[in-house]
Length: 220
Length: 226
Image (cartoon, rainbow over all chains, first blue to last red):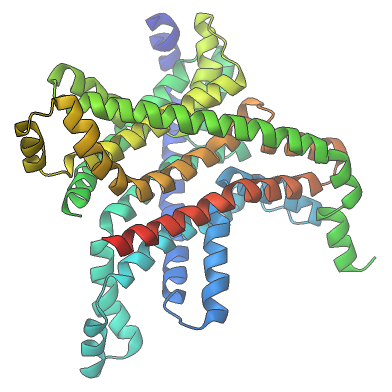
């Protein structure tokens, strides 16, 4: 059993490949999490516009990307767009897909955060002479983010896990590298090692989240 | 051809779509079957674990918490790849369907256990004590007093989580499962036209958009009632 799933010889041979994958997963996460947050911030700020011409298309946009499996979006960009003469490459496709998909999720969370701030605070800030934009930046957003921090963290966990989709479009991230090593060695050890790395990397966040979530529901 | 016509011919080619529509329909059937299995088995397993956890035996709780943490931390695609490509090394060869089903079931089990557990612990201890003091047994208290209140709280987060995980059925295409995305992808390479992918995308929207809208509705409804 250990010979098959945790073969030290295989680990000795494959650790460099897998470690390179880990590096790329971290780098990819550092790109796509801010991208998703940016997309979410734009959506959540637009959600404050009362005009129905903005409101309804916005809701449709968010629901559309929440209903669409991210892998389908990614494959569409990667395998569909080249037919229209637009060959973007794996990295660009992952970035666009994450901006659209995770942006919709971050947007919903940030919107809930912004809506949790009482109108009186905004009125008070405006009456002191603060402009609309500065009210948003100094008064609303800091409190909004704090109010929905558990949800933001939980979504970030999902986004980091989702970077494993990059393997489907040949991005050399952790899962892709592990599968390369597996097919070279005919042994599942690299995949087990990759799974252990994911677990060790994300476990602290999972622990933290489960404590935060229990507290939130207990208060409700 | 104008640009617009060329665009339509590429992404909305009716001839290609008509030819591959039966394939996509078959893929939809597989997706629906898989999704239904994942939802039912995942939620039941999650609820069962949460109930066992509420008994409060340390020996049982530690493995439950560990399993939940494990399946929350691992990307579903990694679990699918492990089951499908890894288990054959010990002469277990689950099919693509079973691999995808088991993976998503474990993930939904983990997330729903967390939510059910949070719901159960949100019921104040006084209610347990009051129910027990009227002569209700532990089981009766759980079923008649605690669960009805706890489950109501869990519905909105549970719905959203279930949808997000069920969308993962598309991951099955990575292990050559003939669900919507898998069928659409092979149709694209056979026809050398991306229209089947457009059709597949539409199929996903038909299946999941109603779920997303119901989820949104539940969220607002539950918020009003509080």
